[in-house]
Length: 177
Image 1 (cartoon, rainbow, N blue to C red):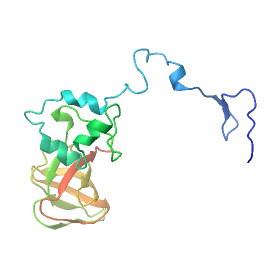
Image 2 (image 1 turned 90 degrees about the horizontal axis):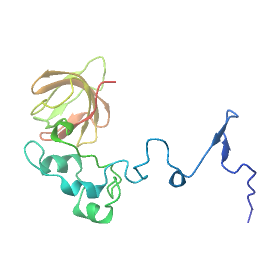
Image 3 (image 1 turned 90 degrees about the vertical axis):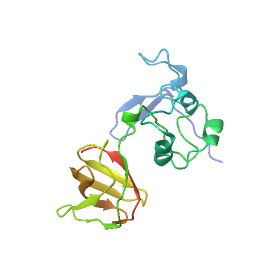
């Protein structure tokens, strides 16, 4: 078995460009401004969501669509984590932050050509940004350049299948670039 000998100073790393970086154990130091935080409390944990009240526009069905693999066991087994057992970062905010969730209306073939986008018919474009990216339940990534109407996007498939089936779900993936 080979033995590794570390040279002093032990907490410096030489980068490929030749510069040195001093590294430290985060748990042994507290950066300025983080005096009241630990590395586990800078963001919400799953246990923090036990206090969420589902009412109005913010309903459990919306959470189920955004996190289809989420189960009670995530809250039981990972209460001090912000990640589900499936590896998804669980971020749940007030209903305005749960933007853009709709379903395809009818079976559709979507263009894969950015120069020749097609209209994508959905139940609603409410709560979606004016342009951005959609992720579908068929695992397609669609870039849409505009909302043509309250039930239509103009866009094309960037990756994944270029077909949508009736009631396929579409969620806001990101905003304009």
